[in-house]
Image (cartoon, rainbow, N blue to C red):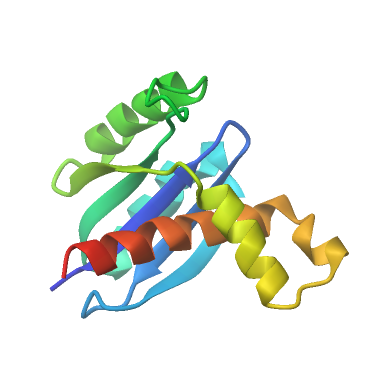
Length: 137
């Protein structure tokens, strides 16, 4: 059984989370500048078995695509070309940033730490992955 990797792709930064090998627990992995994600994932998949990529699907509250959807679709094409043997699934990412901020508040992080956008992106990817794991058991 391979790991599952969740990707919260953004214009500048991308948060990445990964499951354990048994696909039970999600954990934040890293936040990278978006142009570094494909090389990072190539190296990661050489060292770890990955079964699925979950790609956050940016939609508005009315389910229409958000402004980031075009970038996410282009990224998906590049990811598919670069790592074609791994399945890619879109996952609704609405509310993940709100949930990430709430988790940071409940976790007692100071205001300065909550302003760390890289941490929010990584935590958002973790929320995408954990919710997928819970819904697909």
